Amino acid sequence: MRMYDIILKKREGGHLAPEEIRFVIEGYTKGEIPDYQMSAFLMAVFFRGMTDEETGVLTQAMAHSGDMVDLSEIQGVKVDKHSTGGVGDKTTLIVAPIAAACGCRVAKMSGRGLGHTGGTVDKMESIPGMRTSLSEKEFVEIVNRTGISVTGQSGNLAPADKKIYALRDVTATVESIPLIASSIMSKKLAAGSDCILLDVKAGNGAFMKTTADAVQLAKKMVAIGEQNGRKTAALITNMDYPLGNKIGNALEVQEAAATLRGMGPEDLTEVCLALAENMLFLAQKGTPAKCRAMAWDAICSGRALEKLAAMVEAQGGDPDYIFHPERFGEAPVKEDVAAPEEGYLQDMNTEGIGISAMMLGAGREKKEDAIDPLAGIVLCKKTGDYVKKGETLAVLYTSEESRLKDAEAKYFESVKIKGEKPKKEPLIYARVTKDGVEEKAD
Image 1: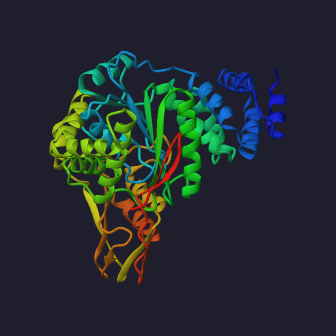
Image 2: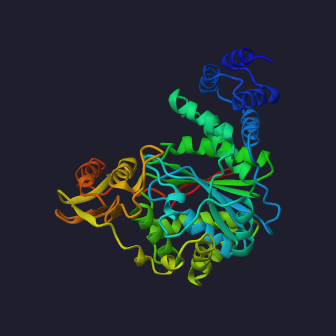
Image 3: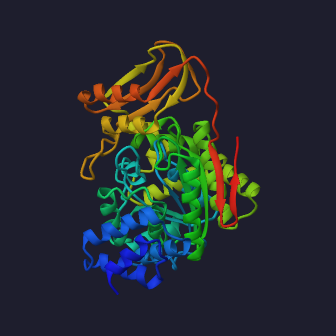
């Protein structure tokens, strides 16, 4: 079998056999296939695409390129949730404790943030003492004891994906539905859960800018999960403006704790209830209506907040920061951003606002950049809100005053104030399952 022939076959629109796909992934992971041939293969896939069958085999080969996490010692149904990334997306810290409080086992591996999107691991590490690097034995023990553990990804989890993504990033082959789907799902399959709920973001702050592209990606990922014996569904959620009011690591933990007390922003609460409902439904906890009621009761009773605190304590963190989030304090430098004119906040460029938070120190441009846990933005006004001239639009927080000027300029670039009120868009556009696409509206 020759890599040249496989590249040629895909370039001409051919259907690759499972053994050909496995040959490519195994050879590249071992270093037997050079970057220039893999680049050509990726570009052929970019232009020619892949069938569901091909994408499923590709994903499985990538998943098996490294460690496969064994969760068999965890009692009960294991449920995972994955977001394709956004701004202000602290949903894992809310829906995972809700699911655990309702009897599911949540054994989740999460990543760090890069660029304008935040990472769950970074948010968790803003809690003093919190450990996100656990051995598999410790990970399993914590889930069995508390019902929930969120940890950083293993260094040898789907190594083929790590190598391929680095190559895609520099060869203009990132925006390929089969390659995106296999990248995400290879890690989900390797992580070992029984059920997978996908939160696929759509909008100007998401990787998928249109709902049509988001649905296409969701359908591909759901098909992969189902082909591999995992109950899988996806929600298409709105990322045309940040989720919730707080952007930044400690700020988002504070907002997650508030939401678990039933005091969170309306948009964040609604999206989290929908995600939790669907996680519970996948775990066969009842009808959608019953699952939503269970999720809300977990919040109202305080059980979900207690689950988050129990996980924090089990992983070395101080649970008092969950019960008393004011203990985080605030960054030493802050600035109110005033509206330059009167009108409706017509539009928010979510990616730009995420970059503004990054410039304040809340995110990283390069993997080695340090994070300022207290840096970020509190949004006082969002799309559709009416503002008066001089009224505070947002508050910027940082530990370095030198960061303010450029971050403020980026924020102002990212918002538009106009005379007319914008049309309200749904928070959730659609639900995708193996049975098809169900459109949502609110």
